[in-house]
Image 1 (cartoon, rainbow, N blue to C red):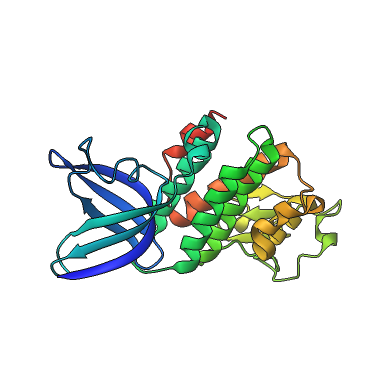
Image 2: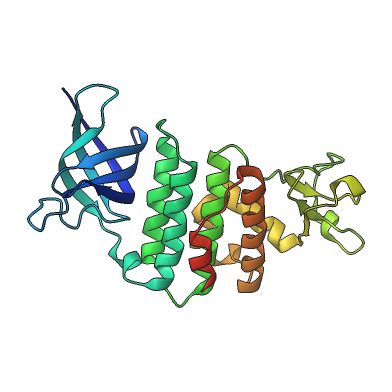
Amino acid sequence: MAKKEITGVVLKDMDLGEDDLLVTFYTREEGLLRLAAPSSKKMTSDFSGMLQKFCWNDIEYYRKDSRSLGSISDLELRCQYAQIKNDLKKLSYGSYILEFIYKTGTEIAQPDYFGHLVRTLSLLMEAEIDVEVELKTIHAVFKLKALDFLGIRPRLQRCSDCQNYMSAEKFADGYKSSLSIRAGGVTCCQKPEISRGRMPIDLSSFKFLAESFSRGYEILLDERELTVDEDRLDYINRILDKFINYHLDLSLNSSRFLSLF
């Protein structure tokens, strides 16, 4: 009977019999992992409060063989992210993050993807709830970096059609630069075959996308990088949602919850 020690965040749970739960974690060592939590629904359970969504735990589990369902034997809580769960606005953003990881994660270890998850949750937990720009920036950067880890990041350096560099001049008057959802990147061309699914993009939005890919959440530390306002961030997030829906065929239920805010 093999015993393992790993670390992971609770993404979801479901009933498994009268007293047990089946819990899905995203782990650093094994990616998506489903484990039985024996007697965890009982009031006297040692795991009480540690198997709720968002909880980051060090996990000890065992399984009889590689084909059997693993069973949790011990948990040590690292972080509950209570500030996310106790605020509806943060909860809406956090629910999107968990569902995205659940639907795009695999059973193969991706330590960097796991690191992206816990860093995003930490920043969301610490964010000021009345600073919409900060929350929407976290939301956009989460999606951009997640796309990068998944290997389908939008192409920004060159036009997706003519392959010319996308210099600042391409966003001046007279050009109609856009991000082509179908082509998977920015374009400065107006050819009919790539016109479908185009979303106009200005220079400030282009710079935000480029900086987010290169620096990630570091842009939050430098106010000079936050040159886009709340309305522009809403537009960038709509672009990313369309890109995700098209290239991942992914529609998230939590988006409806998020749209309330």
